Image 1 (cartoon, rainbow, N blue to C red):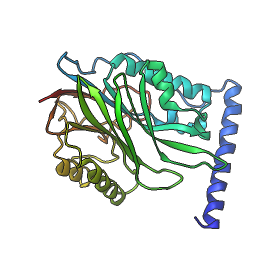
Image 2: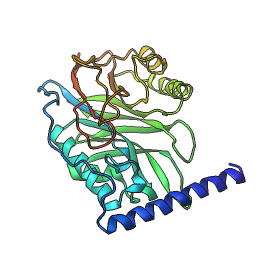
Image 3: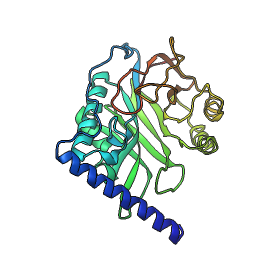
Image 4: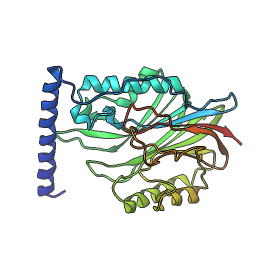
Length: 299
């Protein structure tokens, strides 16, 4: 990185830090700047899981900021409360495997603690693996990525960052989890939000890794594009790996933004050895995304 770019990045971090300090000072005076959604009850839209199936859930938890504009505008105490709310809702759903995106492990903007381990502890999930994709160990720490959590053993784990940017880097993880007495491979991904060109490159890397999987495969996450839209990135992934997903019975299945969902960018896909028998994106406003929950059976 050039000297000029380093100076610009440092200046940006200083500005963000000052803004954060101002917000914390205001908040300490009892002034609520942004509302925090805390309703952790089931919505009634969650799919029913039968004894011969297992449940999978993907959720972008937005760095713990809840429904606020940015995590810099939220105190650590509130971030922990937001994550507790997410954990309470997920625990009520009781998935066999949970995939998370925008999970912080050591970030100045969100309390410098491991959000994945915090959620796992709140839910009583004994197995948790974290994949760091954005690594910045400078004066302003920003280390975050994806995570996979389960009450079942995670027997293998690998993480694949798409690049080495110090801000906004994305990636995917691959984990084998023992579900219903069988090993299933789960990929949890977060694709770039900026350009289709970037997403296509990232999908190609995913295909390169996942084409080697010879057993049941579940691919889930925040893909920042719609399978049915004009962009080809997700169709490339689906076609190359022979994946299928759930077609909503009503509506579009939109997942973003949570308050007024307009586009479907969060998905759960399965390979040929599996079948999604039910799926939903409940209207649960704990972050800026809606969760996606799928009930899956072995064929």
